Length: 300
Picture 1 (cartoon, rainbow, N blue to C red):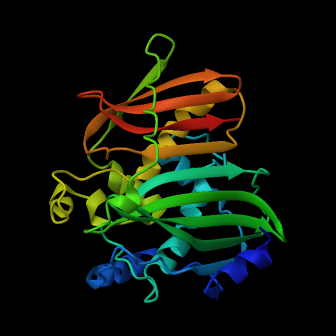
Picture 2 (cartoon, rainbow, N blue to C red; picture 1 turned 45 degrees about the horizontal axis):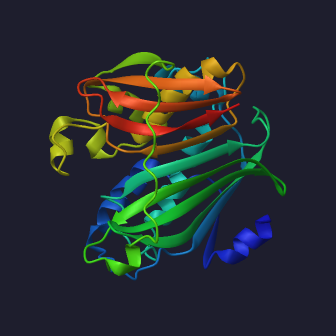
């Protein structure tokens, strides 16, 4: 789809001169709690763009120090964080019919078509895609692109779940039951243990500007129904990428992941991965009980 087609697909489109303030948007997100979507609610097809965005080298260094990448490397996950204020801007708009607090980040599919560089001006484009009914509620996609002119250099699709009570059962019944995901063979897998300290959420918040209370302290997380604070999903994704990428022998160009369970703070995790022919399959496991927390694949 061309940029013009993407713009036409958006019911409302916003041209912004700069990224909105993330902290202010988090406060705005709290005001969306009175939104009560129904089983037939559709996510608003909104879009927004910021032109002439330069990737800041000093910010990348700080982000990399928290996530484990090489000092100046523009990792595959970094653009997702750069664009996050646009995600929050659209999802906190009055036109969007779903509450932001309580949304669940399910999946990400990220691809780098051309390496991103310092000193290049990118247009950052974010659009809200289609809504699908599932047994737990409504899921929808958020598309993000970094472009130079009409050419896409980096793109991602983030899938989000909004829980809705009373979803029709028949509408969600699959024609065939999907095959269960086969666990990775323990014999041929590599394991890397990672300690996730109590302050990891606060450290990541400083570089991501995501100060969601569920990530900061046990006390603030308990206000939203969590027994402990949980680390940001995109930190877990980035840390896993930094570990697995080393086995590929080349920069990662494709990253597909699904979140299964949160990573509590503090805790330990183990990144289990198998690499073959330029692709790694991975699982992130809880140190305490080997529960699967995240799964996916990374390709060079």
